[in-house]
Length: 87
Image (cartoon, rainbow, N blue to C red; front, side, top):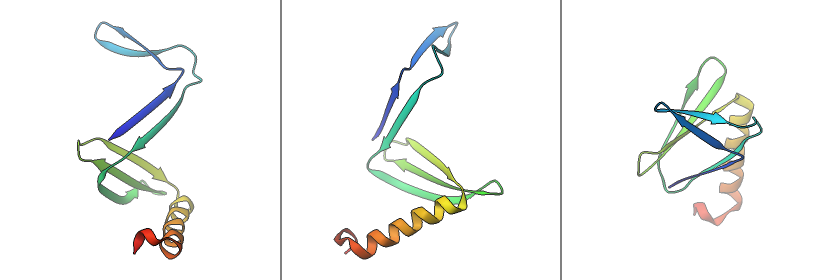
C-alpha cells in the first residue's frame, strides 16, 4: 500500500495536461507498507539507490550518498542486535 500526503498542493488540468499551481512551498510524506520487493544498486558515480515495490506494483526509489547508506546499514545491524523482531 502506498500513501502520499502532499501539503499545499493543487493541480490544474488544462488541455489534457496537469500543471502544479500555487506557491512552491509544498511538502510531501510518502509511506509504503506491505513491501514485496527490495532492490539495492549503484546510482550514478556517487550514490546508492534503494527501490521498494509493493504487491500492487507501486514503487518508491531512494537515492543515498554512501555515508547515508552506511547509516541505514548500521541502523539495521543495531536493530537486529537489540530487537527481538529478527529472532
